[in-house]
Length: 172
Ligand code: HEC
Image (cartoon, rainbow, N blue to C red; front, side, top):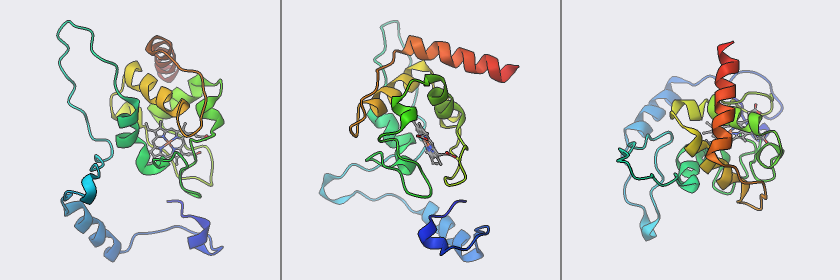
């Protein structure tokens, strides 16, 4: 994994988890989340799958971009959208988030991204979550209108076309 430069002190190499680190992770994973003080909302676990509500004829409401961001993106890109230097890039002020290359943006959300050595790799969050154009549009609109970002809003129809195109390209 990539480690912020402040921890590597100029050295290069691979970070390998020791037995002690693996035991610590196993311990942390066994813990249960207690109620947080002051009514703070308990953050949902990364990639928590939402029960897909059975749609019974009536038009279902569009998903909420803010809660999708909180459960699937925030652990890396942070609630303030500023990321973490040396590990996760900021989405605040990102030209990919606010710019014109919507295909790249959708592709990153669905299939992950590993373009630069100074950052870690992003997993295929959207594909793992089995997201449709509705979730992808909601999350893009959330990121384009927060933290001072001011990008053009998208519609699920627009995103559907890009998703189809990306799938076609991957099948070739
Ligand atoms: C496990 C950590 C992780 C999660 C979760 C994650 N990302 Fe990322 N994301 C990254 C990393 C690392 C990069 C940079 C990869 C690179 O450039 O090599 C990145 C890059 C991006 C970029 C490109 C930004 C830029 O300006 O270069 C966008 C957009 C993005 N992520 C959106 C999202 C969205 C939306 C979600 C939630 C659906 C999400 N990410 C979830 C780690 C994560």
